[in-house]
Length: 174
Figure 1 (cartoon, rainbow, N blue to C red):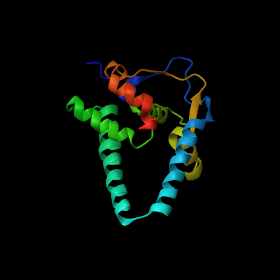
Figure 2: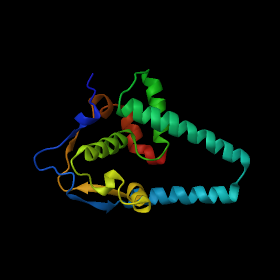
Figure 3: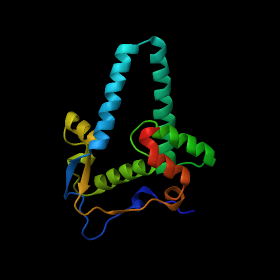
Figure 4: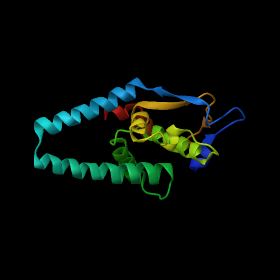
């Protein structure tokens, strides 16, 4: 099985620098984030109920803990454990429901941030070093575009999996 560790998926060459680049606003992600936030606030104000709050809390725990933390992070990114493929898909799908990215996008975001943080110097975007509000804006609305980015390779088992490809294509429209 072709399983790559996080440090193996980011492949820099001689021209790659983790410092040379720029913060770029990503309109689609920004509109997505703002629309979800606005609709959430409107929903709370107009349709508040204690039952709805309880459902929100339970679903948040399930998607963040079982989905993002266990499915996306421990299982898909770090391969910390093995399980049946169907269970893997369910856990990763719950992670997709968090709304940050699809499976390949999450692997890429995680590994690129880790790669940046392992370098001698780390720019403010991947190090979360620009203060709370600017970091929040950058993380939710922008990307750090390197002038000469490293090559990024996702293991074939994930990259060629039709279920993960489907999740990646449609994660925003879940």
